[in-house]
Image 1: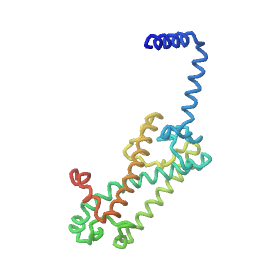
Image 2 (image 1 turned 45 degrees about the horizontal axis):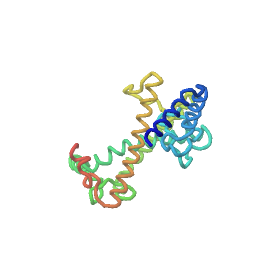
Image 3 (image 1 turned 30 degrees about the vertical axis):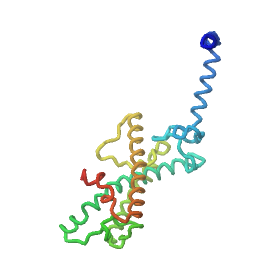
Image 4 (image 1 turned 120 degrees about the vertical axis):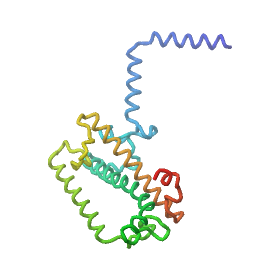
Length: 226
């Protein structure tokens, strides 16, 4: 039985060795084309046509079709994703810092703490937003408006070369000047933004369920470092 199996394998290998090279290349090309048509994030689903890898962080993940049917819709959604990601990165840091240091800072400045009675950051589910001064919301709205104006000006100035989310803000010159380095930096930003959005969702759900600050529920993430 073993000899028969060995002879069969040998014959198969010999036949393959003498197969026409162009046939092998053709099948390989077809295989590569099929792989390119499949989503990198979800290999069992076809890749959305617009998600061809040109955008930073694009791995063909859009199972619900939020990207739209044209480039204008895709660009708009990418810009929204980047802006939400940037806000989430700020919030992912600011949320636990507020729970750790708001009381001590408020006491030092002679102000009332802005945290809830349980010590959690104020939010829609936690409550406590009534403690936030109106001046704060005016400042937030003003900064958001300035950012939108800068983004609109960048769109007009750059035209087709406009990069979604680019508002010309880079005081530390962190963005590389070469195309490859710039795309790598954009990929890092979008990935960190996506993780931050998931982190904020985790904060909200955890505090809504357990009714206690996230810094108390998972102190090893925060108090051991801060």
